[in-house]
Length: 408
Image (cartoon, rainbow, N blue to C red; front, side, top):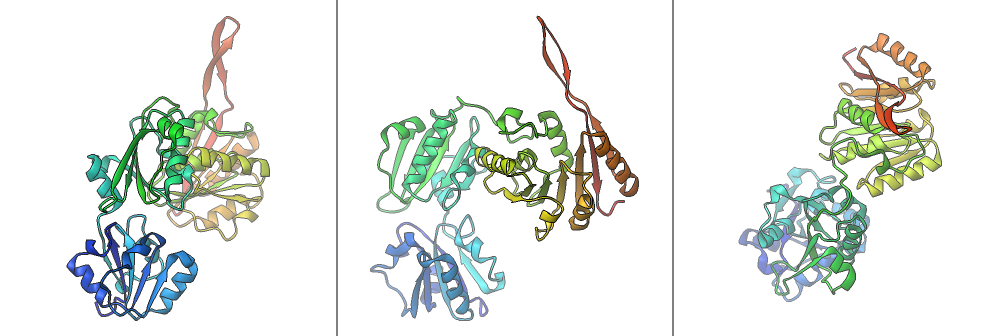
């Protein structure tokens, strides 16, 4: 413990009285306390050590963080709501401070408290944060029968979530707004999403939102292969059947970073992110109108964390983080594009490229001869009206090349 100058303590809505004896002892050893805006009240009237200073994240995260880091080596205690390592300040500070310098004492998270109040098994519930994050993140979790627990930024987040559910056709979903759990002002407001929109009840700013999704809207499954009309596009779209096959070759895995080069409307990168597991993606697209479509699709389909780079590859690839996986959906014949992507790809990573032109197909065959890998041709036909009858309408065949770096 001698080198652990930074202590992070989870605290309940009832303030210092919620602390365990261990946490109280740690607090008495500190010289500086750091609190959030929602915890201003916890220091009022409580027994505290002789503090040298009190810092508040409300003064600006970056400035407060710099002040905390300047105090390295002196006892500093950060008070946080619930579990600091579950969408909390502990997970953020861990990026700046080594674990050996920290001591973390969690309190029950808002998710645990909410699950205990309403009887939902946590392993079957989507646990997300809408606190300081885009509301569009909720979109990917709105599914028939889904249960969602969400941290919020306040009452307005609840109303916005209700608006979104109604807009998506899930107005019959049951919302439970759990206020001040564990505190003297604890209360639960229960309404349908439609009722929340119609009546706009007063809600405490400090709340956790539980959503029991009732299906009466469009189903957008997290399994790759969304309908083509789920995306706004100008025809530059990897069609549903080919997209599902391409995602299977891309093989999303936890925390992996994808470059989607020549992203078009962003369908591949968006479906990569919708697979979950902390996946990350960058969509690179030179045309401004398509960049706008990518951003719209990302928000609508629940992946506002998609990073979009407007520019022509390979120049636009400079200074991006090292990718684990690369998809080249367009431009494989552009000079230097493949070479730049291959050089950037981490060792052991893999690359998938699609082509629909004869020239693109020839380039893929040439690259396979140099680097190995697998070459596949995908042909899809869809039934379409032919007069009074129905016939097959073939889509353009797609040639796909997949290769692992280091296996050539």
